[in-house]
Length: 203
Image (cartoon, rainbow, N blue to C red):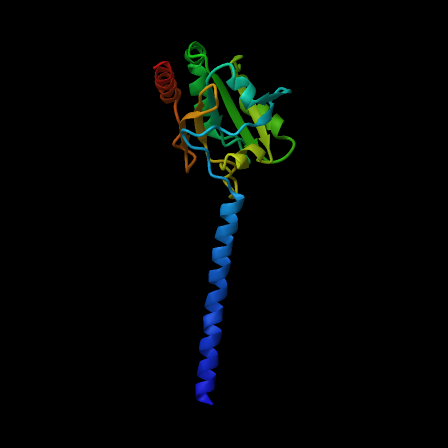
């Protein structure tokens, strides 16, 4: 009788361990299937079309035909206006003439939930004047963010901050994805990458 009880206990214990292990394995599988990986240097950036903060839309493949594109993914609106995003945008605005001289389009993507995201993006822009070769796009409900594998799916989070420097054929010359709120690229960093990419193209 005692042997039977012990055997049943061992069998039950084995199944109690097996079920959680299977659930963990399956959750990891579904996460890997559902989440795209961010595009890497050397790859062609996936095309997308997003709404401009002031109306109309911008398509990546269309603006890339004019020259290099600097694609900067902000944290957007995770329930508040991100202070580090403000610092980064201001940094790039200070170098707008240098980006114009480089023939580059600078595109900011502002992700967040809900249909009121454009209004939040306008609040984020505030009194800042966005030059013609700069664009502020909104990504409501994270369509672009998920496409680029940048969705930060946690409370009070939106997207992993990222920067991509693209050639006119949308090939990625430089990419950086931060795993925190910081670790952003500066305008100086990107201008150096643009010069490096243009020098390589000229050879």
